Length: 446
Ligand code: HEM
Image 1 (tube, rainbow, N blue to C red):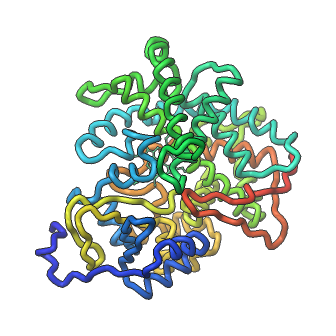
Image 2: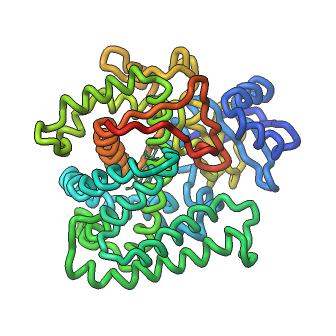
Image 3: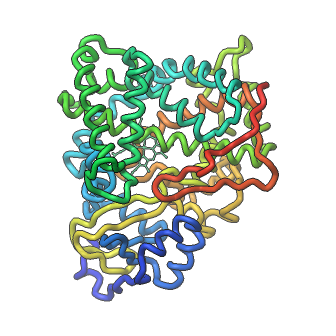
């Protein structure tokens, strides 16, 4: 039944602390503990005023289900995400809504079929191998930094697939980094020299790049994502315009990059703190690899079950997209609270992944939670939501799974890594999580 106010006359009014910014800062430092405190103080929907914007943070899995599954089409992505990243990633799939979103998603889906993923995997393997081989020369390895560089290099091959000089690659990478950084800028106006202004300039560079290469890509095709978007068609034969392809490419690069980087950093961090799991995952990869020293093929990578558990558990403990924002397009109710029309609503996979009702001993690294015997992720439809849920569920989740596992398959067979006893990573949660120290490790070539 539609969650309208007439159906719920007993709705409560959400409240929260007056100094929203102060609490936002505390939430960044100790997200679980401080959210627990706020939830016990104010209830299952928290109202926070941050820089003049009122947010309704809805706790718990039932609220996550209502917002993400969004049966009544009340919660919109576009106005919510645009607030943060709109000028730099406009008209990306995640920023579209309802019928238009569905139309674009149906076409885009064709760039993520099983066959397409197999081709992307084949393209990425040699770059993973050469990228990782170069790590042995790195003097003070910082895993987060290394993963970031590696995924950017791989993205140029698997996503873009255009031969570029080093200078062109560098220009593209810098533009991309500036566009991503701009979304976290505190000053949200094009004041010269600010991240915001640099982000707008970077968007222009990216647009110009893709528009320039588009005609040739349409002609020559290829196994990369850019080429796939040129030929992708819905069942009804609809295709993307040039502008659609450019908008989707810029967004896809962004959507894939920091999320995969933090996932791998979390895996590296937890495997360094739990060497017994690092050895188990290594033994699995060594056993699965062909005897000629080459890497597993696509099916072999998909079959790395222990690695899959490690990846899932690392995403549970550190959800790469900690919070999912929406705007309520109509007045509604959530967790028994009134949500006004136009309100910003957030649900938090990061917080929900630590709910002891679904995840016993939630702070413990325990990949076997995902074993067939336990499957704690099946305890609720929304128990495990690192890729979101509903119609906006990550379209690249299988791509990410293949890329991350292909990299770790190679990494585990090439290196052993460790952190000093007692080390805990300083996680920055201002936007997408990342370790402030970039995760320094001792890296030993095998
Ligand atoms: C471990 C890596 C990744 C994580 C954790 C992740 C997470 C997410 C999440 C949580 C959403 C939903 C956002 C929302 O509901 O508001 C999402 C959407 C999306 N992701 Fe990912 N993502 C990852 C990798 C990728 C990759 C590799 C790609 C592309 C190759 C990608 C492309 C997208 C797109 C296009 C959307 C929007 C889908 C839609 O609105 O229909 N993501 N991702």
